[in-house]
Length: 136
Image (tube, rainbow, N blue to C red):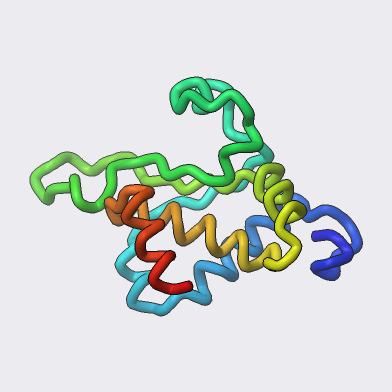
C-alpha cells in the first residue's frame, strides 16, 4: 500500500490478495459459510474481453466482478457448476482509493469484496446499494 497505509509503496497483487483474505476472514462466520466455494482472484485490470462484454470502455471503471452461477439459480439436480470466481482489480481499486482519502484501502477492498459476494448470493446492484444505504 502507500505511505497512507504503512507500506511505503503501492501494494502488489499478493498484498491485495492478503487484504481480500483478511476482509473475508473478518466477515461473520455464518456469512462466510453461506458463501461456500468461491475463488478469489486479484488482477491489475479486467481482461479486454470482459470489458467489451460489459460495455465498459475505461478499465478503471471496474473494481470487481463476480463470474459464476449465483446461488439463487443453482439446483441440486443440475450438474456441478464451474467454481464461482470473484475478481478484484488492483489498479482501479487503488485509483478509487486515491480519489477518496476518507476511506482506508482495507475498507475499500472489503467493500468491493462484499459487493461481489452479494452478486454471488443473487443480489442486483440496486439491491446491494439499498442494503448499503441502510448501513450508512
